[in-house]
Structures are given as structure tokens and as C-alpha cells.
Image (cartoon, rainbow, N blue to C red):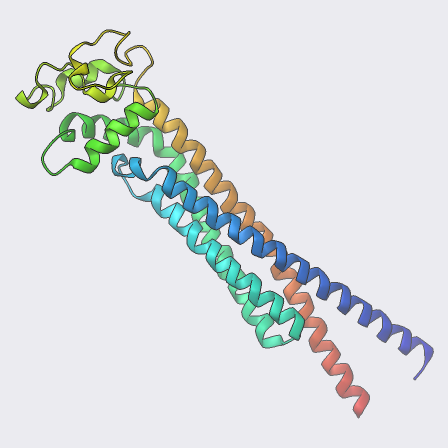
Length: 263
């Protein structure tokens, strides 16, 4: 064996080891990132579950569910990647590479969905939330909507979709079931039975503004987080895919060199 050939083989071995450990470290952080993504998706669903019935479409929830699914898949893929690197099996590495591409597409879809819904969120809320409050609040079979509206007004310290005057034309306020209330009791700063009978700013959230603007801001912030995490992780996976392909190529070349040296 010549000196130049020995030097070349040592260089290739060094490259293989460096790439192997680099890929192993990447997979560890990738696994951690998967747990983070799953946590963000779960947090979004739990934190805003009471408001989902007020949204005109399921796009917000779907984006969060996609993150949860993709995060769990990332954790499985990260573990598979570590095993594939340690065992240096081309088949496992090929499966790992395929899963990376699949997760890349899933995360990209979640990010794009979040971005698209972010663009039309304001208009949908304006059209849907006011109608939901006016027609469905405190109506038979609409308990989930009633609960969501009450939570919304208490959590965000708001009253009505645009302002407290919106309630004057609602089915609930115009019905005998409202008693003498001018607004639902959940509009009150201190909720007590029948407190909605007095619409003074000292009693209800009259000057604080409507709920549409406040809900829109909170949901928009969550959508931006979902979109940024989805697209960010998708870009990170491209790095992993590149490292996986490079490692597969090196393993194939080493096998070819071994076959050549035996002939």
C-alpha cells in the first residue's frame, strides 16, 4: 500500500467519523426539537380549546393537530436516525431520509395553513363571531358556544363582538330568558346573578372594546408561532437530509473500495 493511498484512506475514515458524530448530534437535537414542536401544538390546543367553537373554520385546530402529529413523528425519526448512524446501515439511513422528507412536507403544510389562515382571520371573525353571539348565545343545544362566549368575555375583559351595544339586538337579550338584562352577566367586571341588568361602565366592560379585536390578536400570535415553528423545523430537516445522503454516499464508497481492494 503506497503512502498516498494510506493517507487517502485515513482522510476518508476521519471524514466518516466526523460525519457520523455530526449526524448523531443533529439527531439528538432533532429529537428534542420534535418534543418542543409537539408541546407547542398541544399547548395551542389546550390554551385555546374553549374558543375553537367560535371559529368559522377548523383550520386553526388542524394546524395545531398537524404540529402534534409531526412532532411525535420527529421524535420517532430522531431515534431511528441515531440507531441508523450507530449501526451504519444504509437501509435504515434510507428510511430515515424518507421520513425526513415526509415530515418536511407535513411541517410545510402546517406552516402554509397557519399563514393562509392568518391572512383571512380578521375577516372571518368579523363575519362569524358577531352572528354566533347574536343568534346562538344561551340557546337550546348551544351550551358549548355559550360557555365559550362567557369565557371569552371574562378572559379578555370585553363585551360583545364590537362593543356592549351589540347585545341589544341578540336573540338572548330580546327573549324572556334574559330577564331585565341588557348584556349577559359575563360582561360584568364582577360576575353575579343578574349583574347584566346595569350597563354602566363601572359595572360592565363597556369602554374596553369588543372581543373580536382581542381574540384576533391572540389567535394571530398563535398562528405566527405555529407557522414559524413549522417552516423553521422544515428547513432544519433539509440539513438532516443532506447529512443523511452524504453519510449514505460515504458508506457506499467504502464498500466499493473494500471490494476493489479484495480483487
